[in-house]
Amino acid sequence: MSTLTAAPLVDTEASAVRVRDVSKSFRTRRRSHRAALEGVDLDIAPGEFLCLLGPSGCGKSTLLNILAGFDFPDSGEVLVGGHRVTGPGPDRGVLFQTPRLFPWLTTWQNVLYGPRARGLLTPALRDEAAGLLETVGLSDARDAYPHELSGGMRHRAAFARVLINHPGVLLMDEPFGALDAITRANLQRFLLSLWQERRTTIVFVTHDVEEATLLGDRVAVLSGSPGRTKSILDVGLPRPRTYDDTETLEFVTAKRRIREVLEAAP
Ligand SMILES: Nc1ncnc2c1ncn2[C@@H]1O[C@H](COP(=O)(O)OP(=O)(O)OP(=O)(O)O)[C@@H](O)[C@H]1O
Ligand SMILES: [Mg+2]
Image 1 (cartoon, rainbow, N blue to C red):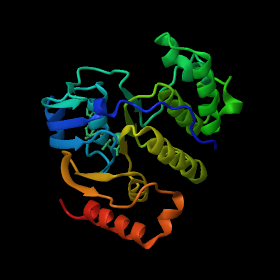
Image 2: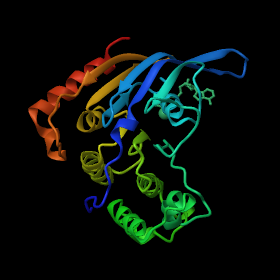
Image 3: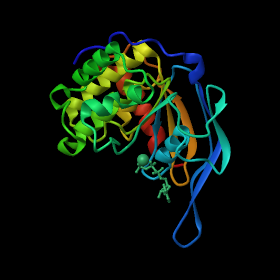
Image 4: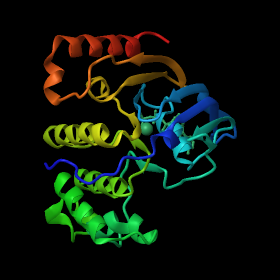
């Protein structure tokens, strides 16, 4: 995998994320309400890499959808760069738990969709798109349509499609969960180098304590149904990190501390 080149630094001041006392419930079929999030507070600094851990169904995707502007809290508010989120915007790049690509466009066209739609398609951007496809291992699949790609390939295409837009905030919902171990490790490496270079603010949902420990500056642990902020932990490991760090005593100790909080009773 190649490293990133020619990636301009984002305006980090515009990329602080604040979640203030956010609650959200959904109407069930029996016309009652099920609380998905209750009083969630999070302050994510510009350029911070925050991992979100919690049991299945605790509201992680709901929170990410609210940050993305695809859904709205019943109470509380979300601010990005000091502005209240009222809908999706190019300041936030979103990778969904299930990759979303335009089925009528090839991989190449999907990746270039954002710049083209905003009239920003330059030769330099095409070069960058080619580099991103190489990085995510899809150079040979650039003319394939989404239905011709495997699930993991679709995840990687969606990743390249988001990165070409240089969002100040990256919202990632278990983006590597469906990938094989080698591809996953490669993309974790790539994400670490990307963050090191661009200092994008990242909110990264994962089930995997090791992944959270490797990637995150802090880990926010949500408790189950309805999701509440149970604990926010500093990972406390030096940067830059590499995959080899996962074998150090410091790493194993940090991972154990996070696992204990995750597994402790609410
Ligand atoms: N559109 C919806 N309509 C009704 N209920 C919903 C909707 N979206 C989420 N929920 C409910 O809200 C709760 C939180 O769901 P969410 O998908 O946010 O959990 P999650 O933490 O992302 O889970 P997982 O780790 O399995 O992806 C669940 O009880 C779910 O059933
Ligand atoms: Mg989810």
